[in-house]
Length: 180
Image (tube, rainbow, N blue to C red; front, side, top):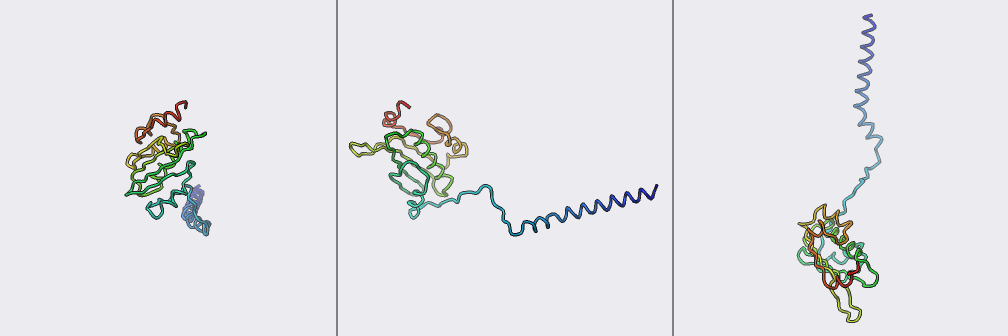
């Protein structure tokens, strides 16, 4: 009987040592199997752009905006942009989508924009004069993840976006979108 106990103990001991050695060898085995392969990140951060006079035009023309850029100015960490709105057949949602894109770009893809002055202008067909529809004053210090998330679905309603951003709607906006 005692011989059986010793044999069982020896068997358990040998199996335990084998398991410990196998677990200890796993990292080396994994590194051999992974040789030549590279890890691919699932999420990659967009490289931040340091905006300046030298790259302003190239950077702005690469943005996925649906409204044309009418004017751009860069002055000591303040980016001022005018986007031109075509009066025929454009929904105000297009304006809000372009606003969201400009804010995301300015505060998540650049390292040095502290303030974005964004204006939406409409050209008067008869006089060729530009008329202001909407102005937005956005500051990096007031933009957080809640604002960025809310911007994805923003359509002019009150909420975190209107609390953090400074909107100025003009009488031209009221005339243009009074039925919306």
